[in-house]
Amino acid sequence: MRTTRTVIETRHFAIRAVACTDDHPRWSAPEPAPSAHIVLVQRGHFRVDVEGRKVTAEPATGYLHLPGEELRFAHPAGGDVCTAVTLSDDELTGGVRAGSRAVRGRSVPVGSRAVRVDARLELAHRLLLRSGGDPGFAAAEAVLDLVRLALREQPHDTPPPGRADLAERAREAVLADPLAAAGLVELARMLDTSPSHLSHTFRHHVGMPVSRYRNRVRVSRALARLDQGETDLAALAAGLGFSDQAHLTRVMRAELGHTPGRVRALLAS
Image (cartoon, rainbow, N blue to C red; front, side, top):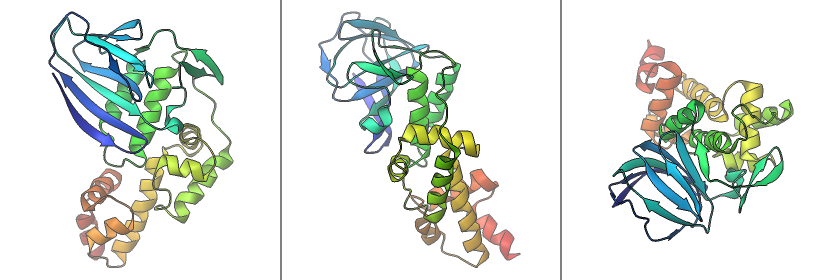
């Protein structure tokens, strides 16, 4: 038996925690895969057969499967808990394509579907599970980090960043209207580039993720509004594109160490 908890779901991707209590050494009946997935194990281990490619999934080894493939599972050691990242948008999948992966601009057939989980990928996995506060940017960037690490050819294989002017155009777009740049995919479309390329280029040239920069801009505007006497925190949060007042509070506490109410009191005094 499997239970699934949705951590975050957008039209581009979904992150789900899956707990399985199955306990059987034999292979299950085949299950079709409607979307591309990267699966990483939090606890326990199990066996998966992706179209004849068998993988033992455990905390040091995850697996990838592509849309339309059939999967079978065996659970010789009992239950397990894993994270399933569903990639429903081709703009985010990068190298996850029908039967191939991109390595330095080349399409390379995928032989084994095992994903080696080193310390960097495990950290990206854990950050992904903590990224639900701002699905527009933070979660998308965490997904991209995980995809890059899962599909890389070598442990230190990192694509070169783009030109600095792309990062500057992204900054200008966020400064002009943080609400218009509602998500990483949408911002990349505005700038005629891919989300992965934009995320990597921005972090290289600006020194922080796009999500952190956008939050910094929004917190700055929140401070200006509070300094001008704003008292309606719910309206302030909505006007700056936060999902609710609690989201504004989390971001301001992370950036300033203070809640909006405390900042308002400090400015008033």
